[in-house]
Image: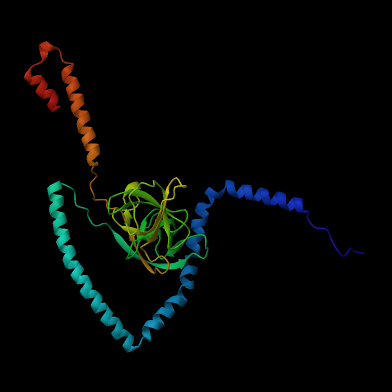
Length: 315
């Protein structure tokens, strides 16, 4: 007669097996990236298929829009067009003045870089991660580390690329950091995500640093990842507590991270000439002058004539 309750595998054996599998996965995690990319490329058609109902709903909403709604949108667009035209006229004057100043300073003009519009296909369902999936991948030249912006500011950067899709880590993610500077006084800092889609923070900023509420933070260009000058966030709170070593500075991202649908992918400007900073050029110039003076002082008195000195300085 068989017993009613059959004894299964012991709990100790299960625990040991789980520990062995965990250690094995940790050791082989970096080798699984090609497999993940291959699976992502294979599953890309499923992502497009899952996106079909949303596309159909959007098409239906546009097809059955009422005349009054279209007239209202038309009026709003005309008003925005007038406002943008007025701003464009002022910006044209600023652009011309900027070109004259650059000509005086001998600074190279920044050329327009390549750009591409992409659509958001999927948003992270994990509350602890802030990323979106775009409908462009390696076939269109997307690469890991590529900066992504929208109409208001920086969205984030590409962290994973498959054949037809790419994953963008947003600036609000807790693992994301971006070099920024304050437009008011050029103070530089690092803006880190907090896991909150509406807030980022500036860490390790001295309490004496001149940062106030309302300051605009833009990309500083350091690290050669994000181009310089793109808006990132605006400071919303600054706390300088005597019991803390650093100031607590929070900012709100300018990009609409919670409702983005279209983003802009930016490529680096390959035609932009490389120029050393002014302070580095000054140091190189001083070092060359010091080396020239030292070489002149080492020449014997009998050989110090005008011609050798002049030729050596010219060299």
